Image (cartoon, rainbow, N blue to C red; front, side):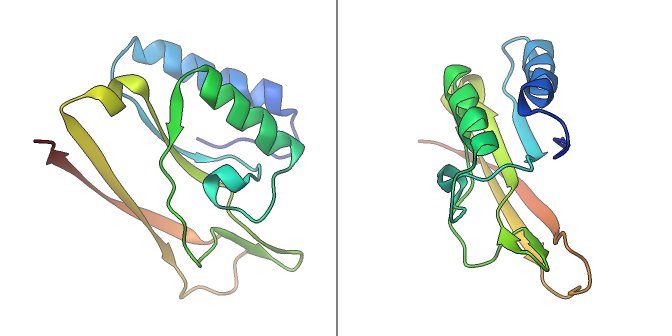
Length: 127
């Protein structure tokens, strides 16, 4: 899902809430271009959009699955940042199978601002 950087974060969060509601208590994993920054998802700083989103995710019992990396998911002439998130809900976190999601950043294409990412998705039984 994509959050438009030019729109107020509260409007964008409503899209997230609609998806969560549609999941109807099923396990949910969302890949998101949040266009917001937070140290909670291993960016160097937290901006207002990031703080609003992280507080909302906590209030909805959503969990940020990003892991720290020296690679960033966004680069432009103004700098680099981590604005892409993988989030899951409590229902998925509590299941007997836990998602293993690894995002890989394609560093070959240096001409675009946004790095291309892909994931390898598998399930691991928790014993």
